Image (tube, rainbow, N blue to C red; front, side):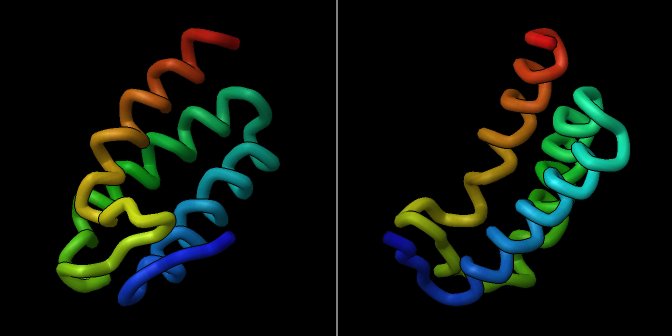
Length: 78
């Protein structure tokens, strides 16, 4: 079930495209690189999606707090 507010669906699509594209292009290291790049991008662009933007009831402004540690975990778990 997809639930979003504001432009959260576009933010989720952007994050997914970055992670999948980097994973396909660079292999296993690309997934962690894609997570890191999308975390930094969400940190820089969280205002562009609007203050109330969210996907799966989780606001976009908190996504970098999850994407960056997840990038570190995936880098060291390969």
